[in-house]
Length: 114
Image 1 (cartoon, rainbow, N blue to C red):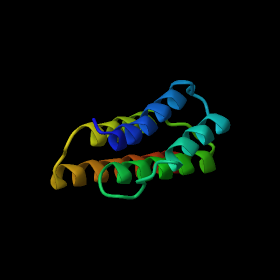
Image 2 (image 1 turned 120 degrees about the horizontal axis):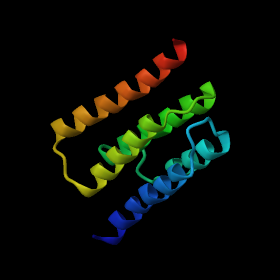
Image 3 (image 1 turned 90 degrees about the vertical axis):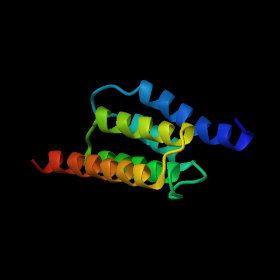
Image 4 (image 1 turned 90 degrees about the horizontal axis):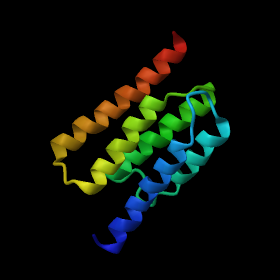
């Protein structure tokens, strides 16, 4: 793996470490620490892994602002982020993945409203 790819993957590694210490209850400091790692990702918003990082950042923003915790939604985003960095999904697969992550974010918001 080239050094640039290793550096990108190191952000996922760091995010997974932050996630591992989060409990099931809302933890503003823990979620903020995770958000800080995600916000440092240099390719945020770029096609593929950058879109996943942006989606995770938006999810974390929603959870923090709603004073909520959704470990499953965060875990799915982290797995998707790693997947995008270690595999080579085609455009259609990437589109499906990104739409699925958006649905997870939306579901998390709907749970608050319920």
